[in-house]
Image (cartoon, rainbow, N blue to C red; front, side, top):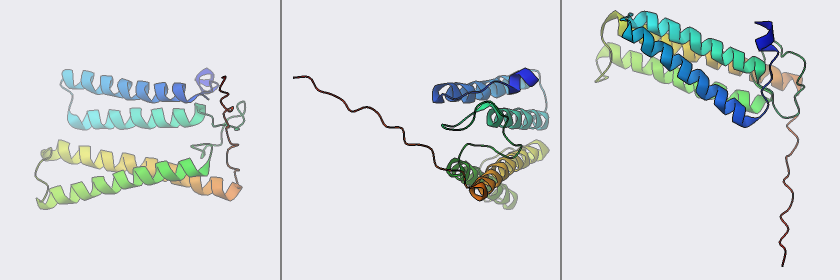
Length: 165
């Protein structure tokens, strides 16, 4: 496991490939479990764990522009800069609130479609907890990074284009 945590991903293309790959791994595992006839509650729990591991591993191996590559990040640091942590934290907070709203509307019968029974309830609660936990991690990172006074990234200027006559 130590060797995996020593990897550093700094280019945005590789970060995107990591995110897509993590999504596809989670999707493949869920599809395989459904094909085996596994209960939806178990699939929700496994998906929750796979998503959380992928996000935490990504936070350990991704590096931002100007961020030191060699040393390990502190346990609470999810991004290189507070601005990105705020944005991702707010995104997942909105998703969590939306999930909670959906659960309430399902409970009172105002939401027209949704999984029924215990599996549907567990799935909705798992999504709510997952988004809430991820929002907490990113918002905690944003607050701590702001307190540290992490400087904004250096501007990345492109060379001026020269037109030859």
